[in-house]
Image 1 (cartoon, helix red, strand yellow):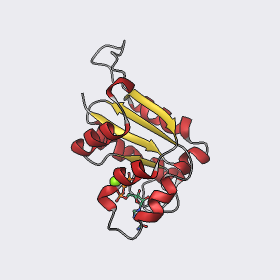
Image 2: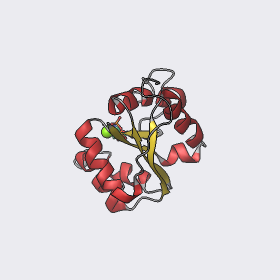
Image 3: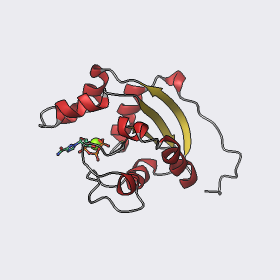
Length: 148
Ligand code: RTP
Ligand code: MG
């Protein structure tokens, strides 16, 4: 079953959006398999956003992610990587569609509420970076397999 890494960024936590965001993933039909509320070290933030290290916004992005706690999560389900990106919306909240998390709550690109892995391989490396195997709980839904 496919998994993705989702992080509610410091602005999502500060604005009280944790419950709403988790609810959107649950009601869509995905299963939570890992979650922790945590402060992020510079080392972890720099590794997580390593692909952007040459970009002009890298320093301010790392400053922001380490500024206040985040909620790190792993969600599981059919095509969850792509579906999560759809639920989240485009990077710049000014153009994210209404109904998406960023489209409903965001205004500026540097404060866009939430992160989601952008591909299956990225998801695998991000899950391994943020979680140990023991922190992930695999569970069977009591619903029938045809129910989504
Ligand atoms: P994320 O990785 O956080 O889920 O966001 P994303 O895939 O939609 O966008 P990405 O290109 O990976 O950018 C990572 C984060 O960097 C900040 N950013 N600022 N021009 C800018 O100032 C700029 N561009 C990107 C955003 O907060 C973005 O989420
Ligand atoms: Mg990204």
